[in-house]
Length: 218
Image (cartoon, rainbow, N blue to C red; front, side, top):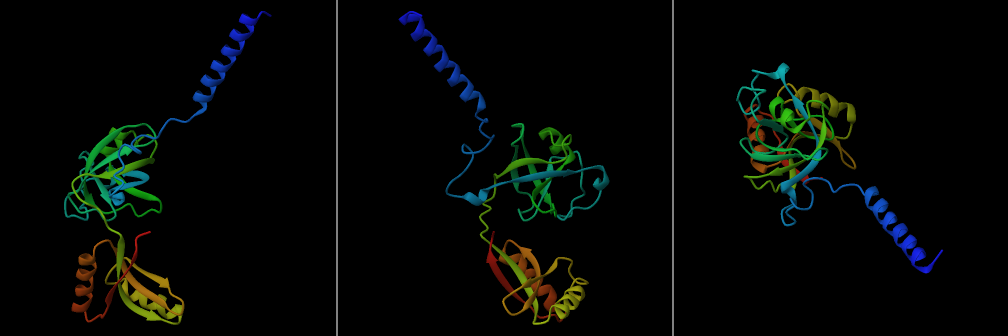
């Protein structure tokens, strides 16, 4: 093989190797670095989205509105009602804006529950769930703590469970958290101090003493 042919052969091999190596690299995820605001990291959430439809159509949402599966709305655990959010399906690149008017989802690992219309636009109705990025548009969601109303503290876990069940007659979201020496009975969580104070006041009206505690948002 002549020198020119040998050089040409080597060049072709190098080019083929470059093409193959590029093909193996996964594509950049949609809506990643170009959307992140490094100074306000709590304005971005990444997680799993689900959706809810006909079985809830016409029922009252947590905001008091009637759920309409054909509106561009969503349920979020703590974003203010009326907040506008951009939801990006990281699996197909589709994106849409929705308005928060409900609370949820209450399934571990999920961060937003889309209306049927929003889920259809994002291509989530076919898959049921999808990994998404949620970007808050008209509200500074900069919560760094979660708040609870502590209603009781017990050294004995069975007593804590009995008291928790009693408190759940008044408020559904009551949990037990183990501290080094006690089992604390807490109502919540909330992502603003005002909401926790409101619940504390409601318990006080029922002659149930309590106080607000907080912990870092994980």
